[in-house]
Amino acid sequence: RKEVEQDPGPFNVPEGATVAFNCTYSNSASQSFFWYRQDCRKEPKLLMSVYSSGNEDGRFTAQLNRASQYISLLIRDSKLSDSATYLCHGGSQGNLIFGKGTKLSVKP
Amino acid sequence: EAGVVQSPRYKIIEKKQPVAFWCNPISGHNTLYWYRQNLGQGPELLIRYENEEAVDDSQLPKDRFSAERLKGVDSTLKIQPAELGDSAVYLCASSLQDTGANVLTFGAGSRLTVL
Image (cartoon, rainbow over all chains, first blue to last red):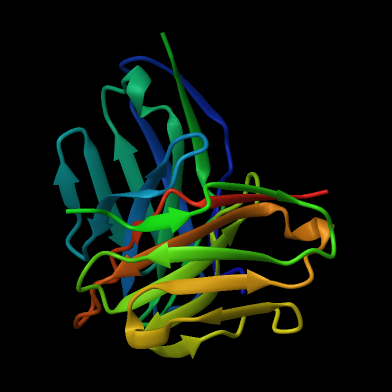
């Protein structure tokens, strides 16, 4: 049931850079989308929900493009502490699926 | 408030042995999930409970895996017998099911190594 696809990366970026990840989904009926952050050998933790109108939380911006069936996560002014794997989670009610995750490494 | 509690954190067993994992969700969360996560992969859903009812167990390998959530609170996931390919992190998560949101809170996971 590979309905959610992510570029595994790794994305290697310098501090202060802007980086964006996409997550495509195949089920046009998908309604709910989230971004989770997972540090090495830790559990995933909710980063932000993705709303139809898009949403922003500090340096992080999430957007939904229903026409092209993808969600995106934009990180501005990257910090070393942003290094982690970013998992998208999406689908229809009761049938949400995680992507494989995109690994981000922010270098000094 | 305590988060999702899982035990054991680590388990090493030989193949063909049984193993069990326990999860206590956040108080009041009616939905409980068991996921399996292999290295470099995203979490894969094994089973989802709403209260004490298993509403999605389509990805649970029923020949060797079983789960229960008696009384609709804590839950156990059992593997018997374990195989080498079962080595993974088993994550429990819970959520408060409402009209649309499915925000998950995960436990720290149980890392299983099958030798």
